[in-house]
Amino acid sequence: MSQRIQRLAIANRGEVAVRIIRACEELDIETVLLHSEVDINSRAYRLATKKICIGPAPTAESYLNIVANVNGAKAGGAQAVHPGFGFLSENADFAQACKDAGLIFVGPSAESIRKLGDKVSCKALAKSLGLPLVPGYQGEDQSVERLVKEAEAIGFPVIVKAAAGGGGRGMKVMRKSQECKELIESAQREARSAFGSEKVFLEKYLDRAKHIEFQIFGDATGKVIQLMDRECSVQRRHQKIIEEAISPSLTLEVRRKMSEAACLIGEAAGYRGAGTVEFLFQDDQFYLLEVNTRLQVEHPVTEMVMGVDLVKAQILTAQGDAVFGHLGQAANQRQPHGHAIECRIYAENPFLGGVPSTGKLGTVVWPEGPGRRFEYGFESGDEITSYYDPMIAKVIVWDETRPRAIKKMKKVLSESVVFGVHTNIPYLQEIFSHPEFVSGKMTTRFIDQYFSAPIEAVAPTPIEEKVIQEVKRKVGQTSSGPDQANESSPFSSFWRGV
Amino acid sequence: MRYFIDTPEISQWVEAEWIQGRFWIHLNGKTFVVEDERSKSGRGKRSDTDQASDLTAPMPGKVTKILVKLQQKIKKGEAILVMEAMKMEYTLKAGADGEIKKLNCQVGDQVVIGQLLAELQIAPLKEGGSPQ
Image (cartoon, rainbow over all chains, first blue to last red):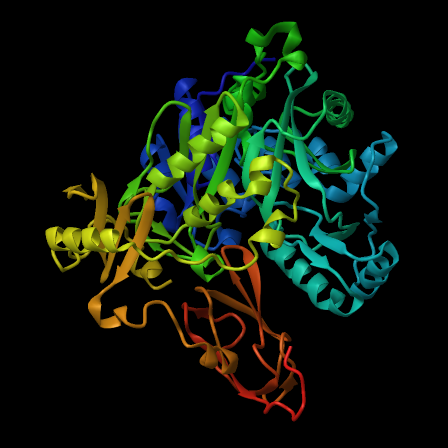
């Protein structure tokens, strides 16, 4: 039952909104951007066919507001809604509300999201399928006293996580009984604020594991294929910073077993569209961690090595079309080609331990070239506010081998220019030069082990100092007048103050 | 703006721009931010002695929880308040043993970077006590 989508609403912001707009343009689909008041100063706003403001800046009143998003999509005349990642993308109620309103939700069904997206029920399903899991507590009793007791029973270190979400929000590692109460309460608050539910669960924290995940894709006929793996071991506060495809650490045999496990759970949940099955991998053993029932931030690395367009495939699948036809019957056996690496550019100050850096973007330059891809949602003149995730762009490179891809990434980062806010680029540059990263042996503790302290700012050399003074003279000593870019915003007075 | 620099040592395009009293320049693969002359001497370095006694916001955001009361005795590393910015929670901890002298914020306050949130009366080091 094919239903042609003519106009699609985007319930998201930033670079993923731009990514979805690009896919729609190539499929001759119009777009409706559902945005908050402050996001009129963003690239997606400038690219979308139609724009509908769904509320003020705070996420609870706009991007997390189910009714506002559904009403916005209807008002904009859309037949479908793409939720992107984060926000409502893994919210079964939103998927259901879209369906009830006669909108196609670009993603799995509400039932699949309930089965897999809620980490607790996902583990129950995995267990019933005989898939390996990390020991933990997924009970309904969410009292702090019970959680502390369970943590003690599992044995430290134990990690507490939000049942409803990902992206590092609502996750804390507990190393001793005394700190449990504080960390559990903090995780519950973060979970409520980020996902609307304070349900958490506990898990044994593996301390030298790698994070390896498989891209799965359920087509319109109900078949689930796998599109190889990504390694995302470089994480800070459980938020991924660097992702690559494919992992440099898996043997053929382990890769085959993991991909089979990934497809198995996808099929058991009747999965449709793009999804990711995350594993922890330690001492040649793998443990199913969670399933993300959505497009991932790091989907570009899979696209680069597998030669697919996951966003277009999602939209085509949502309207009932066959996808990956060019891969034929052998879609599941398709081999990756070369190596791709992505890093996330965050607006933060690497010299102050990564505290968020907000402000208006000045000059921004992304150095184009062969095998380089830039996904960004904000341009010169746009403001990075403290309301949302600090990610301003993703830089993706592809090359024939991992060492070449690393070399290319270092070159790209050194040529990338972002003025107006500090970024983590200097921090990333150090990571890409670190011997453990270069060796491919890094674990999820990599950042804790080697990059827990703020990095040192490098002072200009005498020659550079001379050049700086010379350019300063050329530019003139004064800063330019008030910026024009945001003057058109009717809300400027509102968000200037933040 | 792009400028072509042609000196015997460096011959390349550089990006440079003044933004609100700071000079941003990208040169040799690095971005330098030069404060204007007035604040240059103290560039980015707040004195560490103050940090132990004053609790300032490390970033703009919202105060979501205050875990201490006025005059409460606290230990170094103890959580004083919780902030939220960009959907992440940050717990601000005491830099030293002491007592809460003043609380300058309330739950729900939007605060700016560097804003004074609480003041601490540092406890004198005990004789023979080993600092951690």
